[in-house]
Length: 186
Image 1 (cartoon, rainbow, N blue to C red):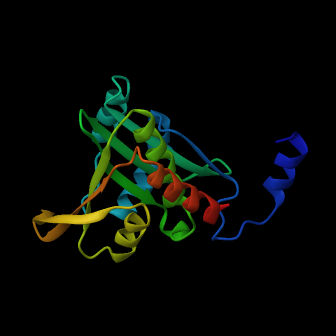
Image 2 (cartoon, one colour; image 1 turned 90 degrees about the horizontal axis):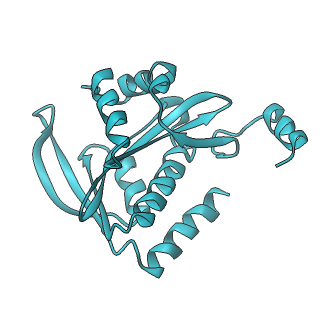
């Protein structure tokens, strides 16, 4: 992209449903005070502490974790994390600024995380999602996740979690699914 294109994009109004101008990069410590902790507090009744995030960032050095942030015009609008085990990738969290919900940010973050899991040779990925979070469940279904079980009172010892799995992520069929998602976001 040329300098002129970047300048024009910077001045162009963005529709809320657009992922144009969304930049995805690795989470850094300074991102915690630049927006991640604010989004975390707005997204979860019992948010992770700064210390938990710092520990996760430290574990990125060993390759067991992978965290990304999404930015628009230097403003952090979302983040997502993965934890790698020998047999799978586990989505630790996906959170988006409430003003950016349903704008494609979570989809773009999940696409980037799917690419990472696939590049590391993971055969599957998994996650837990609140039973009440219908929108998130729909998002995960688009990515091929299917309900596989329930963890009773998983969240705050009050709300159930639906365990979802997505298998065969190394397959051609899964690559085609991700390509379709990318095309819808373009």
